[in-house]
Length: 395
View 1: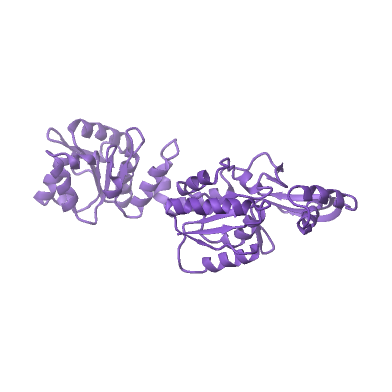
View 2: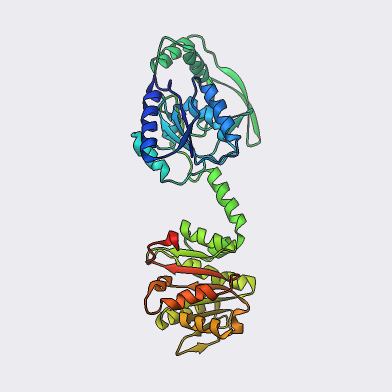
C-alpha cells in the first residue's frame, strides 16, 4: 500500500494533469494507494501526518507537485521510514534537479521507483522546520515572498516582476554568523545555505552535491557497528563488497542460514569464507563441502593460504589431512556419512558451506544434499552457494 499526494495547483495546473496520469498508471499496474490530497496544501499535509500516525505500514509516498509541496511533505517524513517518490510538476522543480531525475515521463518514473531501493539524503533544520534544498534569507527570500502573494500573474513571470519591485528598495542587511565555531558579523544582500545544487528554477548554487552524503555515510557507519565481525572480515580484502555479499555476511552474523545465488565469478564464495571466519572467531567448527574432489583440493589450498595448514583439514575419498582441524574441506558424501554414523565431529560444528548446492536437483546424487539438509541439527547454520539455482526465492 502506497500513499499519494497531489498538489493540483502546482505548475499552473500541471500537478492536476500529471496527477491524473499517475492515478491511471497505478491502477493499470494494480498498485494500491491511499490518496491524502486535499483542496489546500496545508490540508494535504495534515492528512499525510494523520496517516503516518496510524499503525499501518506503507511502501512509500508518491508526491506530485513542486518544491513547495515537497517542503510540506518533508516536515512529516523526517523521522519516519517512508520513502519519497517525487514526480515533479512544479514551476521550478529544483529538488528534482538535485535528485538528478532525468526521466520526464510519469510512467517511467513510477516504474523507476517501484524497482529501486530507497536511499538516504540529508536535511537541514532551521528552528523547528526542515529543508531539503536551499535555505535562503535576504533579497531572494523577499522576492519569493512577494511573488507568492501575486494572484493575477502566474508562472515564472511573477518572479521576474517581483525581482524588479524588490530591487528598487532593497538594502543589504546585517547578519551574525557562527560557522564551525568561527563567529563574525557582516552585511549581505542574501545568504543561501545549500543542501541541494540549485534554487529559483535552476540557478546553481553549487556545482554538485557530495556522494555519498553525510546521511549515507552515517547509515553505513551505523550498519558497520551493528555487524562488527562482518566489518572486521571485510577489512581483510582490498576491494569493497557488493551488496549481496554484505547482506549474506550480515545474515550469517545474525545467526541465520543463507542461500547465495549469483553468477560464476560474482564473488559468492566470499560469504562461504565468512562462515570459516566466524568459526575461527566463535570457537566452533566449519565444514566446507564441494561435490567433487578437485574442487575440495582447490578450496583446501585456498583456505590454507588464509588460515595456515594447522587450522584447515581435508577429507575426500583419497585424502585425510588434519581431520580434527577447526575448518575441514570435504566432499559432500563425506558429510552425509558422518551424519549417518553419528560422528562426534558434528558436536561442535557451527557452520556448513554447501558449494554447488544445485546438485540437490541431480537425479543420481541429489539425495545426498537432501539428506544433509534434512538431518543436520537446526543449530548449525548453512551457507548454500550456487550459480545456477533458478528458483532461489522458493528454495
